[in-house]
Image 1 (cartoon, rainbow, N blue to C red):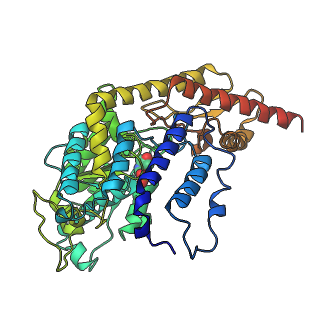
Image 2: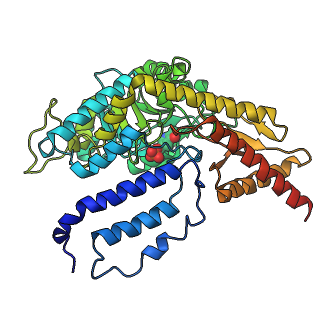
Image 3: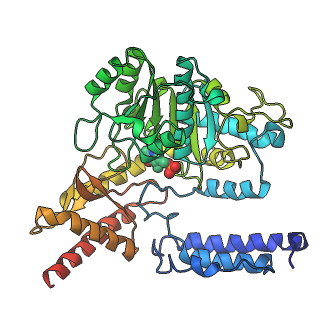
Length: 480
Ligand SMILES: *Cc1c(COP(=O)(O)O)cnc(C)c1O
């Protein structure tokens, strides 16, 4: 029997093992395949019957180190372009280790004045980073999905109060259906949040003017007009994952103000366009919206999981997430109980990594990184345009490039199948990692550049691997 208290003396050794292994793993990132051959094989071997007698600290930690450093996907490295997944800056990574060691619970001010106080600081710095008014409220959550959930929870509360109902106290009693509008760019996680909120996934009306889902502002205006002053919610997507496209936030806000609508901006990675004068116009009008969501584990490059929700009227957060228990204490504007302003009650100190990376690199460092990534995206686009077997499907607005493999001699109706198979081949190959999507009805690649480690050599390899594997697929087809 191994009661953990008997193993206190192994703490140092266990942490040293992790430090050594992490150093080796991180040093191997530039060389190791993004997808190791063992990626799917190891986890099942670690399960089975729950052990009755433990192996002890060091044996367990060694087993996890061996398995993890072998089977991990190299998403921490510079050649992972799938989904939108950032790495962890040196300062953020170190701060995250400290977060676990200090193990602060930031739900209640009294549980950790330092942890909760640092969240106040981190939220303030993030508002400065994104150019949001200091008067807005904000909380750290687990990611973009929960940030959308928080923003839409505040929206739902505002909407119900317009109907004289406190929905968070009394539920839906007598309320009509909540009208939600968006473009076809609306992210799956916003729709998921609408489901979690009981508003219903199907209740969002998407108003689109083209095959890739860009917003039809005239249709939005008539939809709002037809409500005759009844309140509504609009989800504006600032940076969508297929092509890095943006809804026109300012125009949407103008329509919302002329009618009676709340504007929630989902800028999971797109909010970072605000960091450079050359891209900040993409999110013009953000500060006039009502709520906004962004992600830490994407472009801020802090470890998973971390997201940020901002709401113009902080009181709505307290109204929506407030709760009481006999042993809850304190909590005021200066000493917030974040458990009463956010979905999670007990919560880790996400602020430490956020603070450390902003302290370490500053606004200037992040501006430089964002601009470097935009430059890398333009380089990918240029290589696509120069290649006679690649076709770009969208303008590059920020850090996502949408294109497909289109070699001469392959008929249009075979291209989707070819790109699908090529996508699978690229993932299995493992030198680079990038996903496919359907864009305007065509199967396409959509590399997103968000990792601070990514270099020109990395994006060049991405193009080279796609063309090389594409050519062998076409060859194999011909020789069948
Ligand atoms: C990634 C993303 C989300 C969801 O964020 P998670 O951190 O995965 O929860 C929401 N919206 C957009 C536009 C995204 O790109």
